[in-house]
Amino acid sequence: GTPSEETNGAKVPMAAAGLFDEFDAALIVHPGARTTVDAASLAIDAIEFTFLGKAAHAAGAPHEGINALDAVISLFNNLNALREHLTSDVRIHGIISEGGVAPNIVPERAVARFYFRAAERAYLNEVVGKAKKVAEAAALATGCRLEMCNFELSFDNLHSNKLLAATYKTHLEALGVTDIESPSGGKGSTDMGNVSQVTPAIHPSMCIGPKTLVGHTHEFCQAAASPEALAAMLVAAKAMALTGLDVLTDSTLRKQIRAEFAAGKR
Image (cartoon, rainbow, N blue to C red):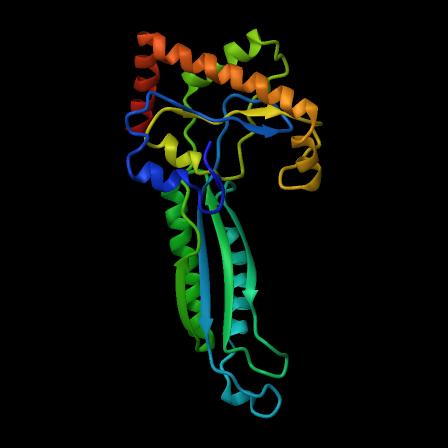
């Protein structure tokens, strides 16, 4: 593992610098409400839209102002309209991080931050291109100036190596884990996706609590600190170590894993 698997994931610059290129395999396990061995994740771009208008007294001289907040609201509305024409794997969610300073001042600056996600990087690039045109339209309609930038690093979607996952599953079962579920399709994003683009990789999940457990909650935090979670972590660590040993000592397995990875890149 590395710090910050989300937001500015540390593995993104590491992968870009070629640090994983010579690896035979990369494995990481995430705690969760279910045990799976073959996970997926969405590619993600984090885009900040800044609209710049002109301040004016909102009651005394509104005609002198250019309302940047109107542009942000238009952006939200038009992105909501865009959703209808995107595939079901796409996720668009955002916030208004700046929206003005006082009700009696026409906002001269407004900022929105959005996450755009999709199952494949190529399609996400299309989605973000459309979103930027939507932002340009909002700026044009309101008379604002628009600035756009990435406020976090971009993650690629995760390509899970099936043979590597099957090897890990064999060791989980040998260690007594029986409640292994089929993946339901990950809707989150992780910098492990970037690693999986340059070397065979898996990102399974290990159950640490009830099926109702949801990530990024107080309940998940409490579950992660429980004795049950520690026991699950030790089992997952053993299974990863045994999988790594197989990769290191079995040249045939290693070649097959690499062949699957190469086929997926074509």
